[in-house]
Amino acid sequence: MGLEMLRDKKRYIMVEATSELNTEKEELDRELKQAVLALTGQLGYYDISPKLVSVVDSRHFVIRCKLKGYEKMLLASALMPFLLLAP
Image (spheres, rainbow, N blue to C red):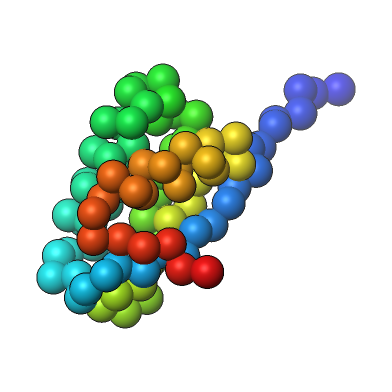
């Protein structure tokens, strides 16, 4: 019998910018990671594990994070002043 690999559950968040985004996907991903680090530090960053999944259009994109870090991800997104969480 082998050890079972436990996988973290993920959550996806659709994010809407208040204005058109004029940044590349890599830059947006970097800003997202900086906002999470500013809020939670290195250990909290691991608990959230944010990842920019896709840019839908010039105002919308999708973020993936761990379930246990979902609420902190919502707070970190508030540190990015040009964003609104889509309902």
